[in-house]
Amino acid sequence: MNVFKVYHQLHSKRSQILRLFTICDSNLLPVRPCSSNATPVGLPKVTTNASSDLTKLTVSYGQPMPATHPHLLTEDELVPGIRLAEVQARRKALLALVRNYAATGLDRSVKEHIVVIPSANKKYMSDKIPYVFRQNTDFLYLSGCLEPDSVLTLEVDAAGNEKSTLFVRPKDSHAELWDGPRTGVELAPHVFGVDEAVNVSDLKNYLTKYSFAHPHGLVWFDEKECDLEDIRKMVGDVSRSEVVRSPLGLIHRLRVVKTPAERELMRRTCQIASAAINRTMQESKAGQSEHQLFAKVDFFSRMAGASYLAYPPVVAGGANATVIHYVNNNQIVKDGEMVLMDAGCEYGGYTSDITRTWPINGEFSEPQRILYELLSQVQQELLKCLHNAGGETLDQLFDTMCLRLGKYLQEVGLIPKALQGADLGRAAYKFCPHHVSHYLGMDVHDTPLISRSIALVPGMVCTVEPGIYISLRRKDVPPEFRGLGLRIEDDVLIKPDNQIEVLTEGCVKDIRQIEALIRS
Image (cartoon, rainbow, N blue to C red):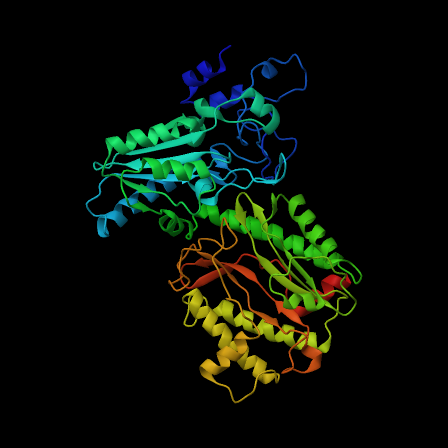
């Protein structure tokens, strides 16, 4: 039977075609909690009988599909939690921004545009041994495609006609034997909701034809962020215009405000990481290595459905916590020391970012308690500032942190009481030399092209993470405070009506709860 002929006859009936196909192994995505005994609606139970008719008709995709991974995706979802229609709407919104930007800027005479968004490529740790593949975030946001070496193009002409084209690797039985299934050109339009799919090897011809057909068209492409060297050269060779615009700023404008579906994914990734850190805290004890604590938070995150940790975590015992980006994680945590853990996970392509600090033996010493209570007070006040005076932008929040942290450090005698205003803020900055917040979403430091000086609006997600770091080498503080490093970090959803939702509220941070948790 010609499977692709069957597909083209039935492509308009997604649920019917999915009933026909069973799939080979695909890339692993985070697990969606479900009953292991449940049979998805519209899908037959697949037996292990080798003579089953279902096993005779197989189609493989380059990523999980609802029919093959019902524990990960529900009907009409392209990636966990995100429906195909939402991905298509993102593409439409980007083209609207492109046209509007051109109409109000230096390119107002340009009426035709093509946006070129490349995927990531595989990266290798040694010969033929790849790192875990992570898709280019902007490409994933606009395509929903998890395959490497692919390119998405979006076009719009003077009449407002739009076209989306996905360039993918073709089916190749030999390559798939080694690297796993590919979706291929034939099925890609149906799977990813694009107007056309083309073999990626034909991209140069496609772009060349476009440039001759639209000699005054504007190309949107970011060379610096492109992993695919041949694509960079290709776009440069075929562009008939000297001007190539980067689309990343416009894409980040879309990504920085989360849709309801994205907010649910942010809630879930924060819940998973919160529970994993709580469990790690509970099982920590003096004499464990930082590496063991790293392994615990990684294990608990994955067992709850996360794909992996969102970034190399900081697991810093004792004075290591005064190194802000300490990731060696190879020292033993001694009795009486604190642990600073900065960790988050990725679920469904969305990340969490949490920091907690706790005493490894379950009891804060007096100097540790003083600094922790001080820092906790600062963080509580900063959370109340969000949306309000002193916290209407992330940069305002940083200024507020410096002044309030400085004030409380004065009260405990770590900053001279005579300092005020800017001088007080500069003195506090020596104790916390990093920004207090960043945007959060598909990336940990999400949408970096969005300024931290713009007003916060509902749908944004950001961190609130004040810290105190006192090096062993500092001579301007009493000896009992030297070598102490603390940070408290939560993830926050900005809501309407000056409200916020602390997405990581489930991660214990009250000093009494921390001590009780570890003792339990």
